[in-house]
Length: 100
Image (cartoon, rainbow, N blue to C red; front, side):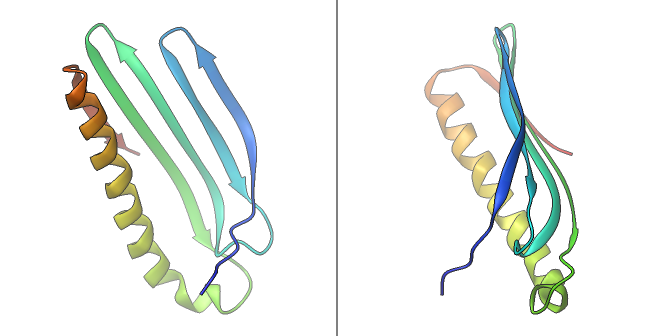
């Protein structure tokens, strides 16, 4: 099963110690909202901040499936954090993951 998830990048961060992007969902996406992914360095510490503001999409079948989609979102974010931790550990930096 293929699921289309149309999004639009609404912001890009490119600073010496901070990079990332934010996107918003577009019509047809299973949820409605925005997400941002920011990686920042504070000395030897590297932080990943993931911010997500979502709600049920107005169209079916996604609206009725929203509780299940929230679970999928949490699993997916956990995977992002796991991969980030693996990368950070390989570089011996201290890593903090914050989900907001």
